Length: 264
Image 1 (cartoon, rainbow, N blue to C red):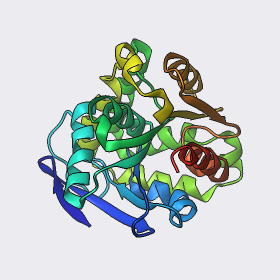
Image 2: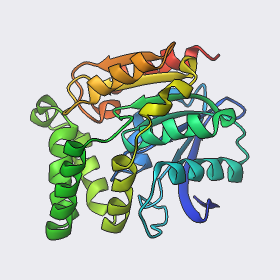
Image 3: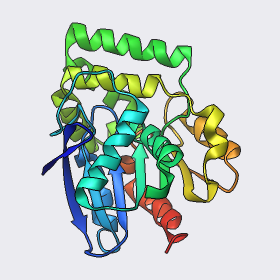
Image 4: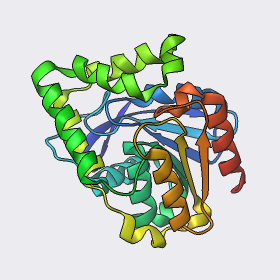
């Protein structure tokens, strides 16, 4: 389904228990709401679940970029308004984690809690140089090239050796993302710097989570953000890389269940 929100049209799906607390899931760059299928199965009995495609992705519109964290958070609020949702828990991975931080910082009354998964509070030169190289590769060689790059490190070598079926599904998500949406979305993850504002977060509403084998500094970022936010919690998922919600869905779901249990 699609609805107008914050000046664009967003694709969304609703599952789960009528009248239960709302639980919203936000996808990573170059994926879509399908990446949350294991979480729908795990939480639909106890929550009303909203999944949506961020602008530029999946079945949502691809308005001109660049996009930024505040814009993406305003999209969520617009979507909640359109659907009559006054407050929701929010789980975001990678780009979705940046959106989670923006939501709790700037739209606090609307947010029951956030889980910031495999994400970061700031970009740095090495990080931005890597994204610039990826964008050049995608422009020169197409989104199939980018799919090889992403799926190569979004899952562990063990998942690749076992031919985890989610690898092919995610590859298809990346391949079918419009390059304009990808390029506009890159600005969300390269323009973020919430380090000066982490002390504004209500730590008792925050879970920082990462795959322990995620490349780069994502596990360290999760630890550092949690250390900077008193009363927050931090969980690392062993045996998982970037898309830990897919590679180790059971462990991921247990961590989210424990997080949400604090508010029931």
